[in-house]
Image (cartoon, rainbow, N blue to C red; front, side, top):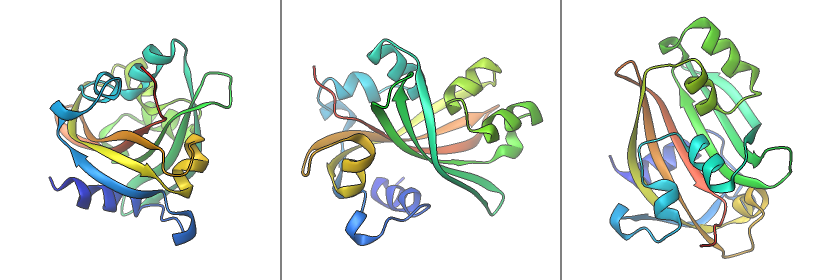
Length: 181
């Protein structure tokens, strides 16, 4: 995997105009070199929904900012928020082959009311999360807006693939709101 190429591909699902670009800079970072607390938050093979809920000690809600179908794949752009608050904890893109889950799981995902990881866990979809890469982001106007960051602030994110029943089903870009130790 070329992390920057994969990042560009996922970010290209919902392109931002130049003056609103998501980030000013993105760099691939070795997993071992990821600083805390981002290492704890991102370097694992678990759902980010669970990590966010554990870190923030609350449930998370999903805001689907945009979604569509393209070439048989369900695409969505999301912000996870601390449950019941406007405080963002994660921004992300999802590319999902919904044919690999049951109609009931598909229906709940398309309702766009529950975070994806929570739906898969609640329905006991056999899954494996493959961590692809860690990225360091310098906020552009998009991340400033979505994650309430300041110009030039830095945060970290990850690229991951979720396998459902042994088949790659979901590609993700998950960017954490800035964390403090």
